[in-house]
Image 1 (cartoon, rainbow, N blue to C red):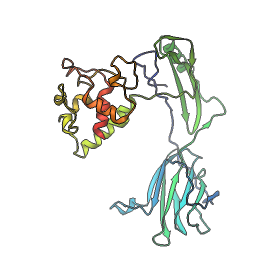
Image 2 (image 1 turned 135 degrees about the vertical axis):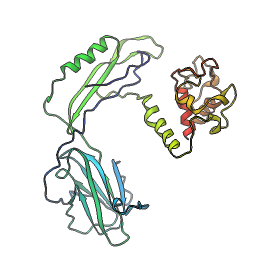
Image 3 (image 1 turned 120 degrees about the vertical axis):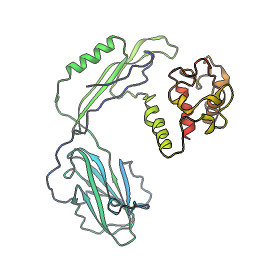
Image 4 (image 1 turned 180 degrees about the horizontal axis):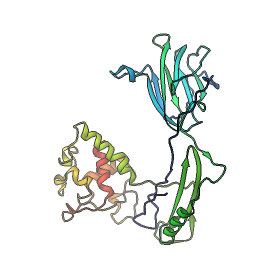
Length: 335
């Protein structure tokens, strides 16, 4: 199974989703003995700790009114994988449970100390639970940091992907530049394959004599996916909080948005790509057809140009024309 999106222009790969078939949920692991700390990492207050999928401090500074949700949570892991860092601030002891199994911490905890635990014997595929209780002495605190799930490369091929390979190659022969396919099962990377080219054209739209082949570590610009996963989610939150009405004029929220008919544009017009803006506007290029007046390498300048200067067409008001400008303005509105 694979998924990718064709770019509006074949010369530039702008959108691709690397599909991971992951987190196939399995049964919970069997009962195991509690764990001892694997390693004492540091006793420095200034240590820089790695990022983590879940970082939570107990007791919570602003606990929920529901008492029984204040001392627990969830994290994701693969069966037989998982790392926990206990960043102790001032506690001497605490009861920490992973999937209802108590970690056996026999010695007293040191203040301003970080401990590392392997959770390999306690985790199962998917969502796992944790709980913290009985932190001593009263008023003491500690922070749990659950590491992101990591992948192991499978030692052997576990499935036949020939039909998928043929399907992608067929689309590449039909004109699609390239793709990367990743398949993950139960924490193991069972397929990682690159297809076609990563770059076929130069910046001036002339074809390269030697296209750059796709690599499995090629970085992709997710581009317009951010419209859905960032801007739209933020707008939905504002609507749910009663702070935004999409049927109101944009000018109500951005007073400087005026002139040349901008007063007529509603938030909904931007959301539906029907405000009358062109598809793209190259602020970053001095040699664009728009001229030097629209060249900008400064966020404040770009926002000002967006709200007051980018030309729009009265003729296309109400017509659906996919435009990055619509969502750039919505991004300013969210701010």
